[in-house]
Length: 145
Image (tube, rainbow, N blue to C red):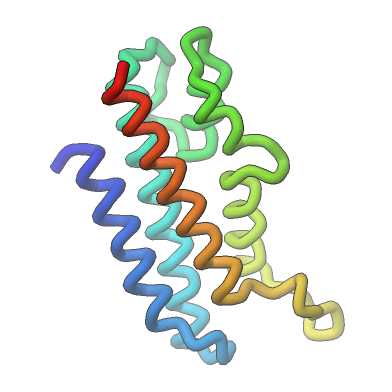
């Protein structure tokens, strides 16, 4: 299976998992939220690999890096595309996802929980929508060139 297919498979798994999440803080629900994050990260990793191969980039030890490092290296490459670097900005998709993932791995204490500190269906849906748009923009741009 190629990277394009892996991107789509993991993205579909993220979407399917999100449909099952109830946000009731049960153990099963917490596991589903972690599965969502892992699937999303795997999709990001495959997307970074897709870009790396399509752009024929020369980055040492690229395949041994995690998804975030890969995307950072791509954005710093001399042939970098602005469609990549925009997503690494403080309000970009990558930082948004890192914040979501961190909250799932190390949730804020009960006394600190506010509506803005918890992951919600809306936040996860926005993340998926933004990611889908990013993938489409990149692929459209790449196929036009």
